[in-house]
Length: 118
Image (cartoon, rainbow, N blue to C red):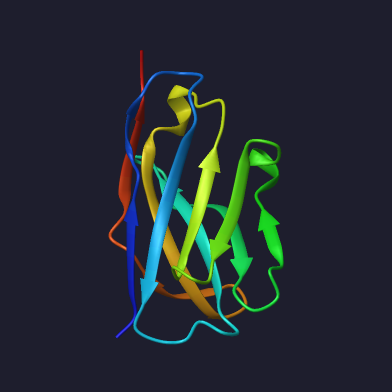
């Protein structure tokens, strides 16, 4: 049973940075792509970034280029997402997902809330 558990969210003032973690377990993720999405109230889930577990290939949302960094730690079976220069519009629930086929995410975590306000 695949499990994805996000952590690292919280309330932060504008301009700060946040690092979110996703602990992945339940199977080998060789050949999988793990990614980050977010969803704000009343909006659709938005793609942020993804990383291939095997070859480290990365894809970043055009909207967030230069503001986010995605990385993986195979020793801890985790991926992280660092966002710099937080703004109120970054307020959302951030989700970790796992994809076995390009563009199709099969598994999701429960999400972690990030709130940006002064």
